[in-house]
Length: 75
Image (tube, rainbow, N blue to C red):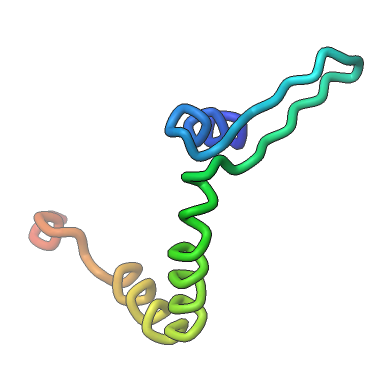
């Protein structure tokens, strides 16, 4: 799953992959310029998430206890 995610980020132009022809194999990933541009908004979202943990936990708990639509009437 990690490799698939890294390949998708590379395909989208957010990562640059460098493969070195050696044994054992070595691959490095680096952020591209566009990848670096995402650091600030992602950091802001992380900060918001930490500051609003109780709110997020409430949403998660409500969803866990919710009955899916269309299933309430079925035995």
